[in-house]
Length: 473
Image (cartoon, rainbow, N blue to C red; front, side, top):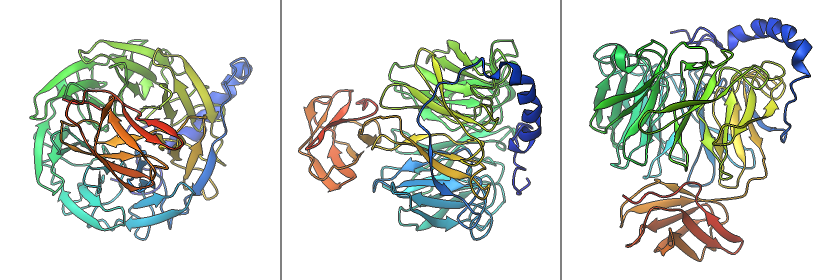
């Protein structure tokens, strides 16, 4: 595994190879460039320019909002030891490096962090640890770091998936390689660090998953694999918490189908799952699809370079109901885009990066509870080491629950802004007992009689509604 800038190009078509190819591609595109109008959105604001010392090359992961209102993320390299960092970012734009990896505790963190119900943050690294195959770690919001597990290849190796916390309280993720067949795994680990290998992939199920998992409203865990399946170009699958896997869809090499999905799925409020493929689609530059829990897949949009190319990040559903995402290439300069898409598939290109404000946004977006979208770019900015940017689309504030489901009597964190004077909390209309922890956090108990629906918090500034429905099993 190479560790230098631009050397991590798993697909053989990473950022290092894009510049020269895009020079030729865009030269050929000039005759019809201006015939393809690009919808204008707000211009992103660069809030951090990485400079190696504070990290560089933020990769697949999107940032996550902590209970204190700050955002937390990782850089793939840089920091005190060159092996990557964990950082926090205040909404005002102040970045603090919380941890620099030193290879013994992990190296090259590529995935998103997870805010668990205990208030700690959890993540994975691509390399490092006792066997150099990657690690699982936790870190407190104040920066106290603990290495929980080192992969030894038999239980998995090379993870950029990040983690999710399932309704049973355990954390789940994937590894790109390793396991019984050397083709990747699904694993779980308790918040305290007890590790269990859940499933080892075989070719027919899909292989080499980059993406993490999500838990559907039906309780299954859903994910994608980059390769393998019936046609060798990736799959969508679901798996039980106990490890029983079902292939929902095998991508094909047909003209219209997508191939090689990098990113995790997102379940929208209509019950469908949405995801992207890094290649394929009508023009070969990647696609966005929806898929039902039963496996009926629909290609909703095929990228055509000017509206983006090679999407690698997970989509998010913002509180306006639309999906937002990035492409790692394409746009008017070939260095990536930001877009939004309706659930029906109408895509609007919001912005094309030009290098000075960042380039190659491989990581995904996150919506802060104040409504602002945040993201990172792999390169670009003043030092060409990557950036953190914000994008305002005029979206209003909301609240977010951690976790997003729970039985009656369960404790729930409610994250938001300006919560200090909250006067009531309801779960789908049923009043709950709550405690204000601070301006960005409330703790509440799922009340008797609660049913699945949105959580609402009444504040002097108005009623804040959760961005997703809270599931009451």
